[in-house]
Figure 1: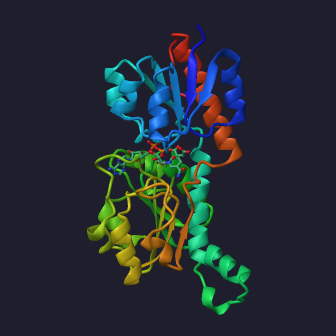
Figure 2: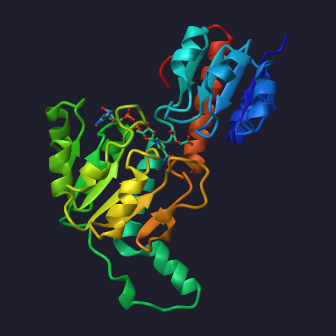
Figure 3: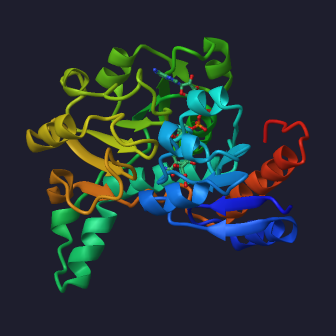
Length: 310
Ligand code: NAD
Ligand code: MLT
């Protein structure tokens, strides 16, 4: 019998074509819980991005599931432990979108430094306001990278070309590795005290949620600009709003939110906050790479072959 591959979120057409060659490919809106629970029961493989919660209930409903594939990096929406307990393999595409995510963080950082999004919106609404949008240069500034993993490194390498001084907080990285990259490892408090820009590149885990909260935002260098293109909640949203309100934080660039999708937030009310709807991986290149990577892994898993790290 042909195996069923259930795709619960948008996947690159090239990957769907590859899968449709061998499998019965079906699609469902993974955010429609009832539809997902109804359809996952017939699936051998389930493919998701970040919006579908693959929790114990979905895994229990997926009685025939053999593999869950995450077409992207973060696995925080997949209960890996529950999947493993049921003998369901979990795969992701850990390098597919890292360049895109790093570029998105840089785009947000520059947009915050130069008021790009707000100035564009006001000009399009008929107001020519040059004096209102005086920004800051990035050159010569200290940039603090929180999480010096794959994306943090790509971000740091690119920011080095802007003539910045780079420091990072990541207790799991060897100082020698950071030094090789021209980055000085520091504690989180020191990073917050010294940075003109802070960019967060962490996974969402119980340890990292709220890592930058009220206490940490009280330590920042006044006028810091903060970017989060990793996961909602790493920078506490209420604490960030309070720090923006009292002017300690001069601006923020946010691609991710505690609740997604989101269309209303106190953070949207600030002129100096640039927001995007979780677009870090939304490039043609990243989506092709993620789609093809998970298509390959799903095929290997359904064929009973070893699935190497992508
Ligand atoms: P990675 O695993 O390569 O790097 C994460 C780094 O965080 C590691 O070096 C790790 O040591 C460090 N870390 C973990 N816990 C820490 C802690 N408590 N304090 C400080 N450092 C800690 O992952 P990556 O590929 O760089 O991706 C990072 C995250 O970015 C992903 O988990 C995902 O959530 C997010 N992401 C977002 C988008 C987007 O569309 N916005 C795209 C891709 C990835
Ligand atoms: C990821 O973790 O890869 C990102 O959230 C991007 C995505 O899922 O599309």
